[in-house]
Image (cartoon, rainbow over all chains, first blue to last red):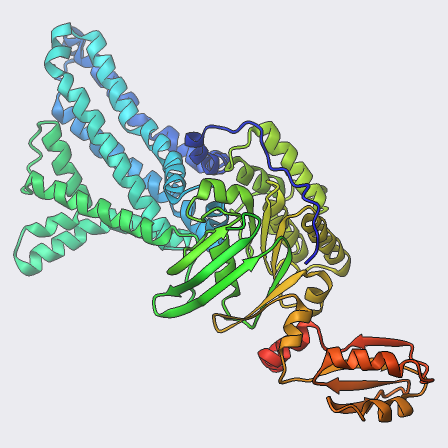
Length: 283
Length: 312
């Protein structure tokens, strides 16, 4: 046994707060995403409807101007925000299909997870770091514009409108936030499961747009209506309509829609827990 | 518990029904420890257990007194380099090292300085701002080593770190290992290059089928293998005379003349006794120039314990 000079001294300087370290992996993801022109273009296009909505809200508070232009007066109500949720919800889904496939799959296919987890960095922090990439981008086109629209309407209306309709703003923001979290989980779960970027994007899109076809086929073949539970758009619209107190004409019960979303979220978390590990057993 | 050692206490790890490692008990002192064994013998599982990436199904592990289930403490002490190329896509060498240092909580300026130092140690400063995807195999190995040493760990766990390195860089890397070991750190190296294990290792661990077959210093392990007589090469001017003399010893089972006619190879079952008796023989006029063990190498031990085919 050799005799060693014990000259080693470990680092004793300052450290950054532990809670903030989950943002480290997001840094390079952001740098990469912001360099993609298509993404910037998409984000710009995604703001068209909120701008249209802002003009609509402004006009709703000017009945005399509407009369001059020959339009009927209209109200900002649950239907307005429901339509907002439909449009921005679809755009946000497309955004997730574009940005999320590579977020986890590249780390898995490149074997980088081992490197993350042989540092003082947990799996939860890793997932939070990836959510920190998706959620802000989704927020920019979903609940933040919804909140701004509600704010505009409140600022140009009587105070009584705000007190009577504050639930509308709360429900619109809540609806969009719920959607953002669910979309992020779906995006990360599929990214962690499907290694090829294009295939992952296709699976994400199929889940949304293919669900309607699957639901229709199930209903047609089996002569039931509960096949609609496979239609993610219908499910979430049922919840939005309930929160916004708007009758969307959906025959689905609200509780079944909530349970469906909960099951979907649980599946996503299960997939993330299964796939985001420091090692992979090669069979 | 010895807080300078890495200890495995009856550790087993199974992947479902597949055996990773079984009943491993080790106490590894500081220095360079080489881990050798055939493919699938459990080397990477042992390294993953040591670096806290996986946890044992049974048994306990302590790295410098720290349990691997305490990642905040554990990973500050351990630097790990994987066998396979593993990098976040699209990063440069500098970004790679820097961003992973930030995960330890080093402030930006400190992380930048440590990144530059690590890259300098592996001679990658010039290529630091190029994307890793464009690196050669040797450069990738070096950047992996750089990320393992960047946070100045007390335990270096390196899975096949010498693969793909050219001779010059390999020599420099081995010097780096020696420097780390001389500071009282652990350098744990899994490798297939057996002659380098002899050159650099303070101790070695030989694995097969998930079990530790042998561990310790190579001479000690070799002397324990009694099925195979020890081989000693003696270079001398009178090999024929020396051969007949040593063959009179009871414990000598075989004597071969060296092909160049300037020495003999002796196979003995009692090396210590042989060396003592050889002191007397050396007084006679055989012109003995050198005496050296011929098979107390990791390669020989590997061949004796695992099999000749696996050692190639």
